[in-house]
Length: 151
Length: 163
Image 1 (cartoon, helix red, strand yellow):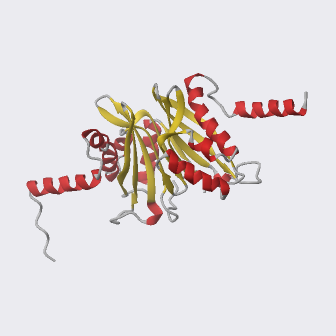
Image 2 (cartoon, one colour):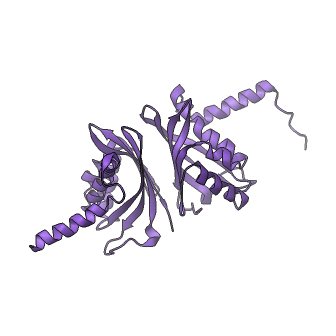
Image 3 (cartoon, helix red, strand yellow):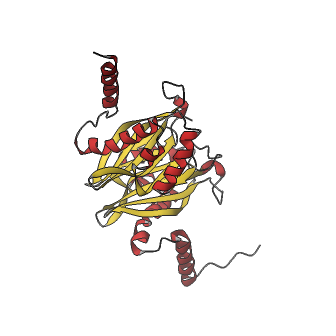
């Protein structure tokens, strides 16, 4: 195996693990929205991140309540250039539930891994609630908020 | 000090109407008011420190997430958790809040965000330590609305309460 192939296999294995208990089915489809959010965050790509939200999507970051995709885009553009630069985010699914065929509620545990760290500092652990909706056949985030677990 | 005369029925009704108008704020459509009854039911149940009545605001498999390591699934877990809380440091507390966002994400699913918090026994308002931002995920359940999910997060740097 080439180094590139080996890296891809390792990356794919890690990525597959992100699905946790929800690899397939409609719950797995819902979870793709969160995985795409993670990927966008890893790339520190504010546009890709914001594009995962619906127009009127809401996001609570720290004590800042953002209430539209464009507010999210603006906030994350600044954040990825400063405080969130080089950070990653983890979000392990603990619960995914279809409230209707096009609205799902998910609970994740994880948090922001600070730049230079391999793993999440327990002090940074949060529990997140997501409302994820199906728009034009694909899943997007309508609302997301986190609560501190240990800090 | 002279005691204020008790309100007569009409005065009471007027005061109640004015309190409700202040609570609804700009969310005055019949649908919005209907779903905003959910937080009011929780507030009323909490005022009695009635864990069963608070849990009854949730769906049978409703989820409760609070700052600190609290992730309760189902009315039964919520009721037991709150019964213990009301037996402990949360005895005599009230909760309060006002809606800052109400939206319907589909027929039968509403998202409410409120700014509020816990009111310590004897206090009239929310101390900074106890201020929260809440998201309420309300679903139509039979004839009314119940909570499929409720989460709150600290509001402001001074919001130090963990459960």
